[in-house]
Length: 502
Picture 1 (cartoon, rainbow, N blue to C red):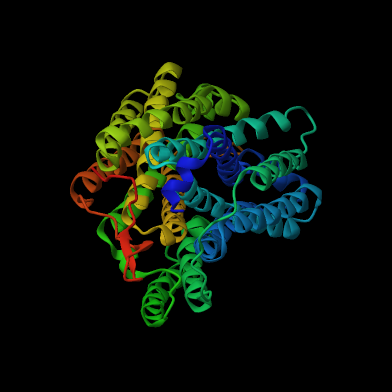
Picture 2: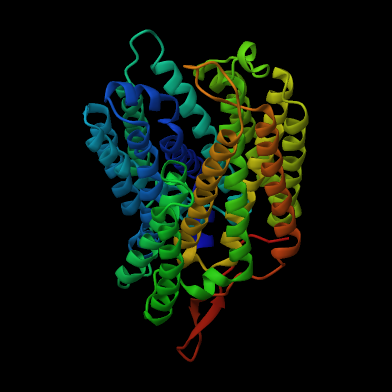
């Protein structure tokens, strides 16, 4: 029975359960990225750590995600999505328990490394959807699961704020929340997600995995730590030079391995290449909105002359949660647009909303209603982008490369987010308001305006990438043996992706 026939034979209720469980698992993924942002100050105080040391609580997860996501995405293609999903969730639960029980910064960072492996859940989930869901419903299913990423980021901020309220906040509660949600997701995967019917098998390309991991670490480490090390320091420049050299080593290694971890032809395939570029730009814009608005609304107006003086919880609930809610709801409209307009035009339409939203935020961020309204428009842009990019990837690669291809796309968004964090943080720190001694420096308002304008320009580039870079193309065809002819030979039939670029 082919994948399409198997999907058609499944009950609609079973499909719905699979989508909801995978959506929950994807939501847990995104929560791991932002869960610690509101509690870094509490962790620093409780563990008596320096600012530089406590920053590794976020950097460790980013680097871990960069290393494990492509490796586990490929492993799922080779050996089965469900067992890989279960294994990743078990590692994440163990890391969350460690983080929730330790009082050592070192062991907390180890726990965060283990949590970072959860990022591989998202590309694995998309691979399961491609295998289990009917082609006519695949767009909506991928859009829903993708939409939970933005929702999870907002939920993590709200949850962390609520769990650390009061005069004696305890950051351990936040990690226990991660444990509970991950256990629920694990139970759902165990009882709902079917076992993979087809695996590619083969050897694991450890050389490709190690060289790619080294490349990503050398690239992301200076991006995330550059503001602490100094952008012209020997460590920063040395890492960037090393990343360039390792990129060359990785390409050579993958071209010489019989079963490469990343097929260079797939990686360089025009729709895949430009979709990854769009992912990088979208990740940049999304995180720029998150970090920019978070800082802006917490600026005390009576001191700086602008801002709203909001608390961490107020910034999350009042100003950022509406963006995430719109992203979750808008993902369904994004799925419908993918079906009607095609993934490429949906990506372009969403990016246009992003340009409008950041333009609004740049010129009118002095009123609560404007900040919230602009954020909601940006949330719609993010949801359309999240709905379109998995569809573009699925339409452009054969089924057996879905996991690794979506894994690379996830990493491109993570790289974009890391770059946004570095750029926006450095930009806000570059021009400050003179304040009396003893008061922390505050950025000039013009720096926020410039930050939002840069993020809007990133969305403008996404429009260009979608309309010019991503051309109409058929997905690579993979021969599938469907039937045996009278002569006893197998007649190949070409696999259909069920997704159109335009």
